Image (spheres, rainbow, N blue to C red):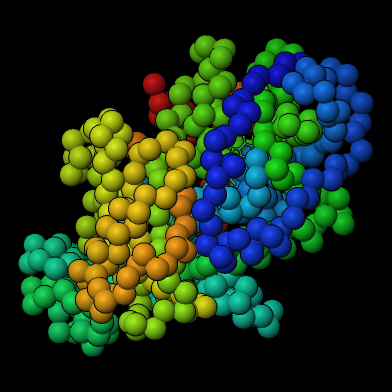
Amino acid sequence: MEAISLPSTNPSFSVRILSSSSFSFRQRFAVSSSPFNPWRSRPRLRARPARSAVAVQKSEHDVVVVGAGIVGLAVARQLLLSSDLSVAVVDAAVPCSGATGAGQGYIWTVHKTPGSETWDLTLRSKQLWEELAESIKNQGRDPAEALGWKKTGSLLVGRTLEESLALEERVRLLNQAGLRAEYLSASSLKLEEPALEIGKEGGAAFVPDDCQIDASQTVSFIEEGNKQFTCQGRYVEFYNDPALSLLRSEHGQTVEGVQTSKNNLYAKRAVVIAAGAWSGPLMKSLLIQPNILPDVPVKPRKGYLLVLENFKKIQLNHGVMEAGYTDHQTATLSNGSFTSEADENDQNISSISMTATLDVRGNLLVGSSRQFIGFNKEMDESIVQRIWDRAGEYFPALKSHNIKEDKNIRIGHRPYMPDGKPVIGPVPALQNLFLATGHEGSGLSMALGTAEMVADMILGNSETIDRTPYSVQGRFS
Ligand SMILES: Cc1cc2nc3c(=O)[nH]c(=O)nc-3n(C[C@H](O)[C@H](O)[C@H](O)COP(=O)(O)OP(=O)(O)OC[C@H]3O[C@@H](n4cnc5c(N)ncnc54)[C@H](O)[C@@H]3O)c2cc1C
């Protein structure tokens, strides 16, 4: 048995800028790392001693999930609900400490392109979110309370004739794909969203059935559900306990578990790496042994979201996003406004595009920025100001509010993939190892579809949607 070292520390774990809502969420989730299932002796699998002198606890599970963001927790949930397997979730910190805690929460189709490679996953995932909200309602609970659920409808807005024509075409494609979508001229839009100013030539694509969640509430709900399986011996969490290495069989071809800072967690069926933007460095360390794995180029893309608590200066009836967001998200993936990803990285170019939503508590959420600056978590006031100024171009009433008085800023690192698609599936060279990451700005939207896909793969079920676009095999050099 062999232990392969993974990065042991992450600089961002010690510095966090949190909204007050995410802070109270984290306080509710105190460390929970009690060992689970008494370790059964398996001398063949004994790991090398951990680096520290602290005694390592051993436990055995069917599946070990690395990462307690929305993706990892949703994968655990799906396995618990659809099988009798036992699941352990391990996180370097606590839930919502990654990108999930910064997420705005839109589960939208308006900015997605029918027929694109991520379209089916987007639709399937949205359907699963809607079914979840419905099932909560059927149990006599309020999905708004459980998930922060709102069916607000989404508006993708343009201010120029060119953008308006593109939005009209988008509506046509969305309709063709079977979605309820409508093009709104500037005057119709004024009736829907009076605070929005887009000029006479502007317009919007409107998808009335798009919805939103609150990431912290939803993670809390999923965790509560997962914990119901604890008494059956099927679920356990190991928090503040980073994964350090993969435990592998003698010949190295099968992954048999995860070594963390305090535990050796053996996995009989699968290890799932769902560590968001950290999945890249985690997987990279496997390259210590050349030729085992292709480089999985997931990298952090920093983003800010401004949270204005109980904000009353504007009335927002729907979720709003500027048309340029679609280029903004993919700017470095194709020939957008940046010449290359390296350019953006080297010059620390940040891009801003306006998104605005109102959450179930009445907080106005205004985003967002995109930046390649590693795992840096410092707050740059100039970016906050630029996000606010951009929002003011669309909502003039915001201009009179001094954003410097609001320090409620969420910062997260989206797991960015250069080809614009998440990576979901088995790692070819290492049996029992699965990846579920790279969702960039759509991880909340795609979490349930991703979880279903991963669980189906582990359980050997047939596919609900085509898995090919997301596979690891043959995708990276
Ligand atoms: C400002 C902003 C707004 C966004 N808005 C939206 C939105 O409205 N809709 C949407 O769909 N998406 C949105 N996103 C994107 C979305 O938040 C992400 O795609 C999603 O949260 C990724 O989830 P994840 O579980 O893959 O990663 P994360 O949430 O980053 O979770 C990864 C976890 O892995 C853990 N980890 C790291 N290293 C280790 C290790 N060695 N051992 C164990 N654990 C480890 C981390 O602590 C972390 O908890 C937004 C993102 C940002 C930044």
